[in-house]
Image (cartoon, rainbow, N blue to C red):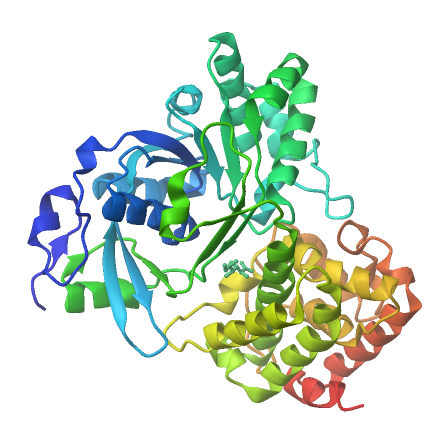
Length: 494
Ligand code: CS2
């Protein structure tokens, strides 16, 4: 094997010349963003945009301080510490051209479980103008039916008991705002970068509920000194696998313990509501808008819903990646029917042309054979995703007495998915906060098929709707007797 270079600040200049490395002096960067949740997605998206801004426009005042809060984040924390915050963005085009770019925008890094007070201090620092978040759908602790913050979530009640060593983002934000108020410091903008409907409003409502319980005197300060713009974020970013790590070593001579793989497509739309001046991120492709709803509906109901559907149906069949499933015409035909007949009529705030273009580009993105986006990744935490990505479509269609046949099939397939065995009798793991309930109720539904749809915390009273349940029961009966591929070949034919 050819010599590879361990990725860190010292070795940057040794990397081959065709690898894009930061052109800027990272020591001159000042940090104005704290980002909570240094996930692969944060690294392929926000950290990338900020890197581009510093690299191309020499705007040195947007450095990121990464913060991780979960025990499970220790590995990425240790690796990024070792690599001086540097990592490789490994972009894979559909035509096979692959590029490696070293991203340098994360210049500081804190780990909550190690030193919560240091994190609170950093978040309260007046130089920090923006606190952004990638905490995943389940990090918001929402009640699936009401969509409201669950103040009784175990993590939240822990934070209420131990406010000075918080574990949740709500605990950290509250303590840091308290310090800002006490010290008479300015506030900041909170930017949620998760696939949640009205993610900024949701974050704000959740935080206010938490604060009114624990620190009601702070409510007025928050109202006057913070803003929570809604955003739409998009870039397909699979889980990094060992093959990618090896290819980077062998073909690019970069020894990176945790690179990020992604597609070249990327979109970030933010509502123009900032406490300080609006950042100049539009120079590198960020779009500002007054109204996020149309963008958000396209993204959640078309892209994320398609992912969930390909994830569930593909896993049942025995496929492992989005590409494999999307490349199968039966699955793609099923998906297309759902998007055209059930989702498109709900997208009343977008024009026809944008919807059709969006759908076309989606299919093309799913068919990138080099992005090994794992169905396993997509199916994680489906109990938080289905209510955000699919059930709003069902609700809209039922209210308008329109078609829900494909959606009912998908929910029936999700029921069967929770049996944990594919059509070749191979088992797979159900990774979900509600896995116990999902697995138990799916098993009960073998005797009593409506049982799964009666999980109120996910479906509310959907099991009472005769139109939906009749399709659902028919689909579940078919799926219990036949392979998923046979079922979808026939489902839309009659
Ligand atoms: C995926 C998203 O997690 C999921 O279910 O649909 O992570 C998706 O890949 C991103 O939102 C793409 O921007």
